[in-house]
Length: 403
Image (tube, rainbow, N blue to C red; front, top):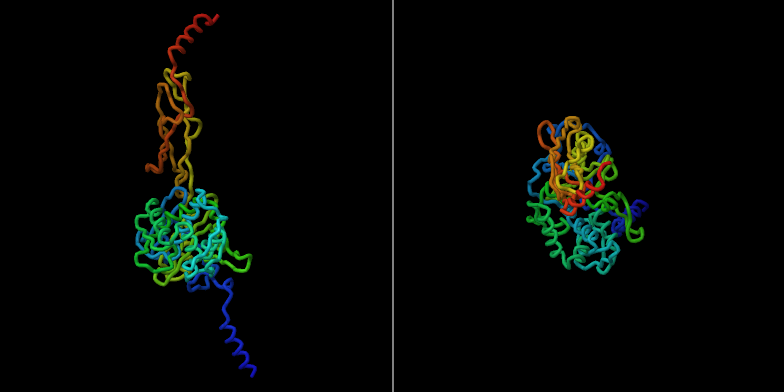
């Protein structure tokens, strides 16, 4: 009887709906990923030594946009929930432009509430501030929250998808077509590439405040009643991880856009169509660790102060050239000492000279190859002397000359 009672109790327990907050939000076959997967590991000495299981991948530095490594980076593939990088980007841009506020109330439609896959189980008519909806999208990849916000912004998901495709075109994402804002549906026309995902990921992390969301490991909504857990395990286990978005469907495989920053340098690693969750994290970790180990970003500048340039017929005898902003370059750490700079400047100028006028060029080279060029400009305005100025100077010389 005791055994029968235990079996009956267990069966009843299985039949009781589980509280939504107790569920793992990423609706994919989760695997036990050993912590060693996220260790630094051995860093290859060159990109040719990289060996990752991801079928399609790219590694990009954020500030310069330089691509360090790629593997089938232009192959059009299904991105699953990595799609939401664009959804989040449009939300962030709307907030930054003042078109929306994080305190705006988002009310859930029946359509949004019906979304499956990863979700926070929103109900029709339920309302949340945008900041909470955004947290659900970023941390738990909530499809219902993504559609709710898309409908709020554009009136319908279809109209929002039009905005997504327009923004993709503006960013130069030439191989991307979105047909929904979640990546949940395996539409054969909903395709992108590792390169295009890196482009939109770079644009997103340029809005620094979104990292307040993308670096959340665990949090809650509904006044603590519903738990959120980040689907990106690198946030907890990889030093410097700043985001960004996981994705999975049976046809897309395991996907990830991973970002990480150390010592002021940030990299983006995108991997698509991986065979397992462990493969995507291992691939991204390997790419990021290689970048941090082998590369650095530097802003070369000439030593000393640039010489002033004489100005003919000017109210000032010369003008000081300046380099307004150095252009950062990505180089291997072993090559930093081989970087050279050369300066070309005008020998003389004739007034007037406007502040900001181009006076020359700074060229940065590495082993004879040009890495960057930067315009050297005038730091001040020098007006042209007038006949009245000439007359005044002559009179001054005649009557107030040297004793």
